[in-house]
Length: 339
Image 1 (cartoon, rainbow, N blue to C red):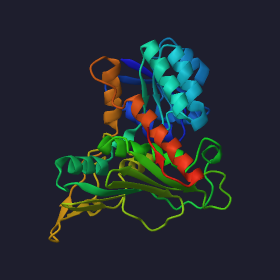
Image 2 (tube, rainbow, N blue to C red):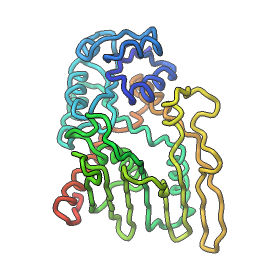
Image 3 (spheres, rainbow, N blue to C red):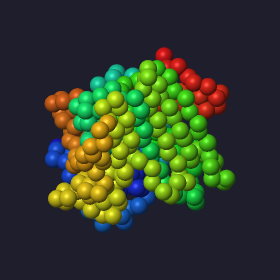
């Protein structure tokens, strides 16, 4: 049994990490570091309640999961690796590419895993998109668009509005990770990043364009859009695919649903995407069943030496390099080549 300690019991800990860990054979949620002791006792009465330092120092803990504000990811992961633990870190892995490089080097020297929590690889719609792209039914893809919008004009939690936070570091790692899975690193990036809420101290809007020869990948997100844009819109020489709506897993888990529920991760038929061929023929493309649990199943297998890490830390590093290039592009107003 892989005894797992979770640091942080906010949204990430309660709706994602704790229920996923508890649902995976071979993992045990043994301890939680949080100030929300009553919430932990109500949901996971067998888990010890502690603080971050004690959890990391506990010799009985094999895996440390970090779900805390962004600026704390790097020092907590460093401390956990130094204590001989495997580590899962919520996105962003670290606040900078340089810090990610240091963490990857530390993990390699310690013989331990550091795994970015890029669970959106197991979104229902992305699984369908990946299968469609790999099938080549769209032919050469010339334009790939992804949008992830919210309408939240009020400021969020304090830590989400502090340095090291913002929309690009919140959603960008997931959106870029999906693109990197599909197409690899681009040749260049250009970006527009700003704050549209007048009192926002961090960015709440971004528009990134990634360049792959003739192909363009456009990633956009805003906290000030009430009407939905397509989650995915993919256009190739063989047709177009358009899909609205988000994967249902987060909403279900936030509402207290179990990942073991029979309908968990299954989208409503109305949310499935539509493929349009050049002759006007339309075909519904069913979304796959989303299953974030596969991330932690993969983590357990990797710790046991049975498989590679479900998400390589180097993939998160690539995403952070793109984020930094995008930030440079937005400041300088020019396209940035990716070395």
